[in-house]
Amino acid sequence: MSATAINYALSGIEQAYTRLNRAAVAISDSAADTTDMPVDTVDLSSQMVELMQSRTQVALNVKVAHAADETDRATLDLLA
Image (cartoon, rainbow, N blue to C red; front, side, top):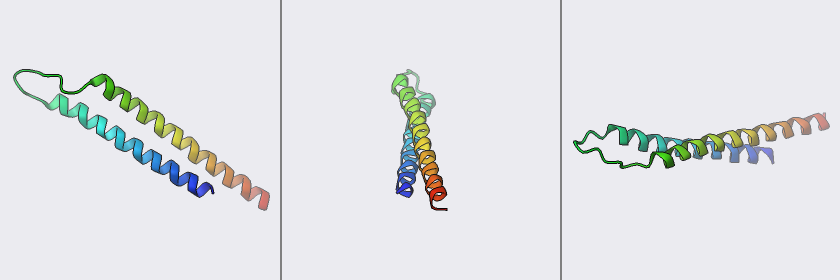
């Protein structure tokens, strides 16, 4: 059962990094715009929220993986 939890946690971490990458690309693309008239093409506040949510998502999924690992260890200790 904890192998499934670890797989879900890894999937969540992967989704968080995908989200982080999208936000980083949006921010860097807006900085790379070199037109004569600067136009705000990206909402930096929403992109920062995306970055913070990605960080939180990774942290929570790491905790899930850690809890699953502890459960495995406790189960092994009971069986040993």
